[in-house]
Image (cartoon, rainbow, N blue to C red; front, side, top):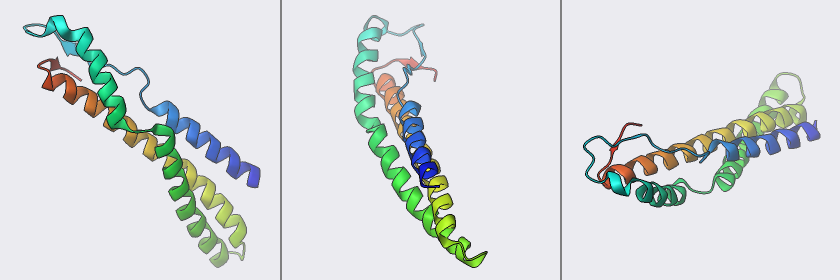
Length: 131
């Protein structure tokens, strides 16, 4: 059961890391864009700014996994104790599920911050960003 917990935590961290900054580039409509000649330069600069604003995915996923694991373990231990005198098994299962969920949520939030910062940067530079 402990190896299952370790596998779930490792998988959640990997999943959270893959979720962010996977080559996303906002779609820009260059029609009537007075800054169209600067598009490639602005895309590069805004990507760097967005990476900084998005945070560190591995760190965020690890924190989310730790918090989710702790909450899940506590919940699992309590329900295991109430419903069958198996607090240890409940804690392990709850911890694994909580760690996976917490890491995935934090990875998604980090990715959303990255994309929002990228789009805002491009809009602030005068480009018509579609998505």
